[in-house]
Image (cartoon, rainbow, N blue to C red; front, side, top):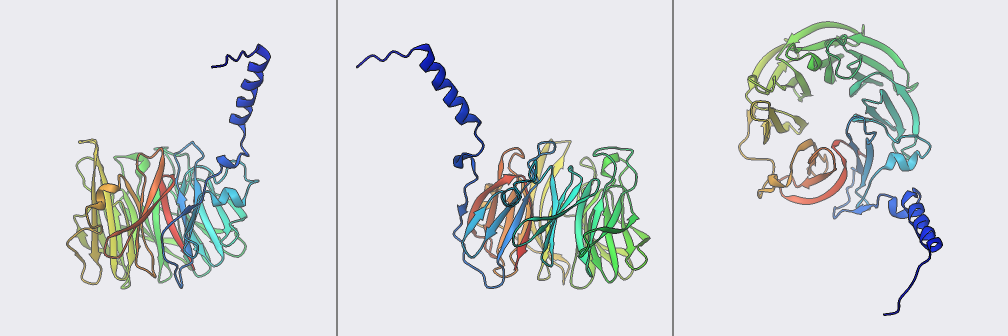
Amino acid sequence: MKNIKLNLQTLLLIALLFSFNACRTDDPLDEEPATEVPTESSDEVKGFFLLNEGNMSMNKAALDYMDYETGIYDKEVFKAANPEAVGGLGDVGNDMGIYGSKLYVVVNASNKVEVLDVNTRKRLKQIDIDNGRYLTFYNGKAYLSTYLGSIGDPNAANGKVVEIDTTSLSITRSVEVGRQPEELVAYNDKIYVANSGGYSAPDYESTVSVIDIDSFTETKRIEVAINLHRIQIDNEGDLYVSSRGDYFETASKLFVVDTETETVKKTFDLAVSNMTFFNDMLYIFSTEFSYQTGENTISYNTLDTTTETVLDGSIIKDGNETLIKIPYGIYINPETKDILITDAKDYVTPGSLYCFSADGVLKWEVETGDIPNKVVFTY
């Protein structure tokens, strides 16, 4: 073999070239490649956005988009459409929703709501709000629950629900509710908000706040259980409200609240981490954590809201539950009835999105960003 001698100048030049290439941010290889998914196109549902939560203080919230027509799953579509947005989407993507032609994204630790054009994904406005949590929409308004105060502060004041005009994109009214309010629904000119009190354990909140929309005042608090989180409403006007318990002796449960009497009418000994309502059915999963064991207990259930009974069998078939390490979000395609379940895995590396048929058979999966959280469909 021929011997090659390199002088010091040549070695320095090579080192500089390697250093330059390693620091480049405009290299096409650094861009997130699109992924083709073997899915059929839909007549009504165009696609969906997926919000990746990202770890707190790491500025890794991200927005992905799945196009059913092309079968292409694109990552980081907010960053691609808004290159001027320093830091991308921000820190901790907590919730999002579509109303009209606008997409509202709640970025919790960045203390803002990003309002985007659904089609172009371009930023229309950034609404500054401390510690925002969850969204719902009603009669031309967006309603947002907010913890207020610093994240994790056990002495934080009561939270609020704020009203956002969807035309002017300005905050028009606010009302105080319980400490650390979580999910909320609007129904029959009222807003129902699940209060948690999660910052001051074991002194949790245990009520659902009732807000009269016309006067925008809290008219009542319905006593339910400690550390409330999720809330859904069925076609008969019953609320399904989840309690996370205290992670020690008090287990997670599901409660049914009658909106006419505004009292609890039924209790299920059913752990709930997340749930979605579709066609008189609640699709539920739980990753119930216990400080006593240091482990999660994972379960999947369906509940018929017309009979208020839990059905036998799992949502997922063929033993595919083992594919999902930490289920985090669950959604139903309203056209195909496919079940979408997000997997947070280890919470620090890219997660996965799994698509199951209505019968629970795995159809496809795709890699997402870190901690895939919320899905909203486009039409």
